[in-house]
Image (cartoon, rainbow over all chains, first blue to last red; front, side, top):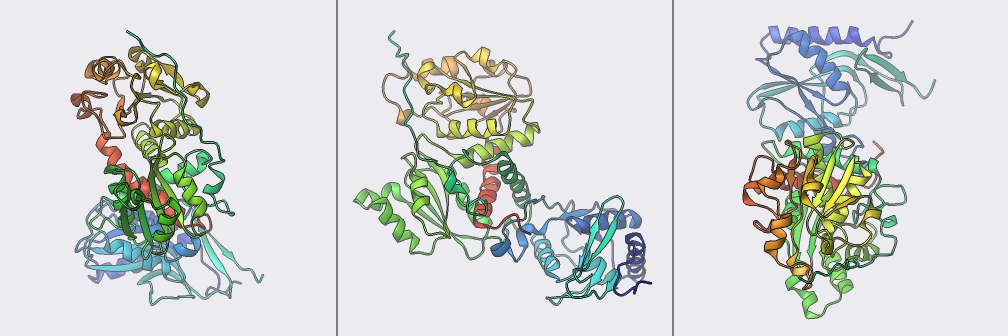
Length: 173
Length: 336
């Protein structure tokens, strides 16, 4: 039997838990007519499902954070850069920022910087399918489908979009 | 009327110009010519440019990619459009930009190119954007800069203008999508045009269906067919079924006497008027690298007309130059 804290649950199960957590906050009045933004690539897959479930009125925004990464000096530009597209103004809006896995927090830091170059949102909540240990920045998710503590060196990777799958890569096994 | 039908030879540029463009890991380091840049790399530059073009639609038209880097625009030959779009591209990448106009500066006082280069390099430059009247000058500079410095060719003599050709390919792709079914015609002063040379390389590399050049015999370099183009001397025949028309500037300043009877004659035969435009496909787009000589190679009504994408080329130039700069400076692109 797998230890649920060390092994990811199936993506569909995590998606439903994530959706419930956001819906609960929405009922409590924390979110007002939110705009949803997914981070390329896995974050967009997760966001597409959530966007449909929540029947949000504004179209889904997508971010490619390649131009905001902090490792450009070491790693250069990502080989596939897609245009970011926020179809509506985010000025003064409540934003749900969606990614697949929260690990170091660097992607989210880059995404926040990019979002603020489009305007000043009223608030930003972070939704991730899997929140794992290993943060290198003071960033945490407001909503997650599952929280994990992985073995040292282990990684989880989402595949998709149809169907969504998750793989645990553990170099020690 | 005496017309000289001997086609002048273009200056030869023999040293292997492309090996130097990549570092030992196969990453783009300098952009000196389209020759030697694979179709995959060209497509990567165009795709990256799509991302940068979207930046210009935002509230803050700037990304932090080249923060702390210094880009030096080294222009030994005057230019407005190319220099300003390179400057804007560097600024939108958050680099510091230095414009040095050497057409009116130290080299005129007798300083050698290498001395000029060493002096500017001492200002901790990370990239040189070079325009020079001599073919091969950017290549020479690339051979002599420090290892961390990248060089982009912004036009050298009759040789190459790679970023112009890339932005033209980008503009064509945005309007027409796939290159394979397209007929593209390059019209006018091909002989003196570094833009035309780079365009021919880029469109052939991207497998354009058919590439044509249309010009009087005196304005076409010898043996240009070997570059993979069909040569036409008649506009009506050359423009038939064409999807993209690229007009070139008649480079009077580079022209020796005797190549053309007169500008009026050239306009009558090769100037793109509404009447001649109707010979191409109805949805053909009209391009021009600028600056356009209205009434010499293009009629104002065409340059400003609904089929013209000339101003769009200028805006696309910023995104394409941002892509070229960031790919050259982010040396390890490919690893994530």
